[in-house]
Length: 212
Image (tube, rainbow, N blue to C red; front, side):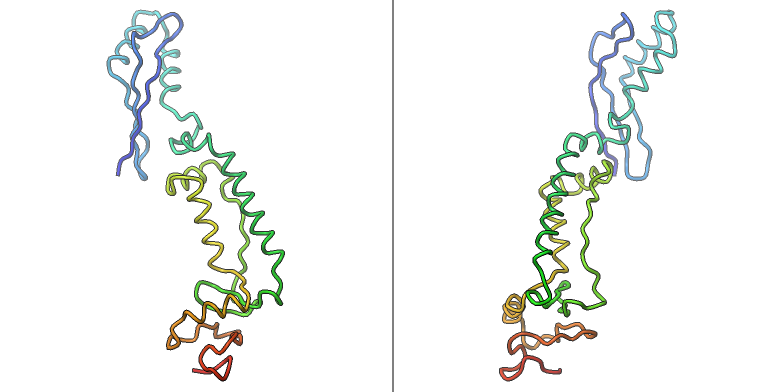
């Protein structure tokens, strides 16, 4: 799939000015280099100025370099994302700080279970790696690609938070409420290694834990 953009620029070198704005286009794909297309009439005017000795070739080349490049020095995605980059970095830092504050209130006594997607673990199960959020948006290009994928900072941060929440510590009450909604004929949701006792009578009115 080929992407593209266009912009209108002024062509003026010294006292010599093209009579109208010049359209410059860029075309690219995920696998190909960028191709720059410049108004042919403007290019002919530029060559005529060089041929007439009114400007030199170095000046013409410098103008062409200036209009066939990205303001960010990287790509069109970075050009588009640059104005909101600082805001995104700040908001991600705030989201990580919120996550860390919430984790500081969690103890093995208050949140004895670890939920990893739909699998239930003891809070200290060794096979589950704890979530340690870091700010991956500090690099403009990485932020720009994600912004292009998600469309907005809000959507991007919401997705990060949801990903972090796929592995989280929960209370016995939270787990009991989840188990009440679960099909009692479903397979045992516990981790086979740590196999924590479940709150409430999950499989039987008589016992918290039953083997299947």
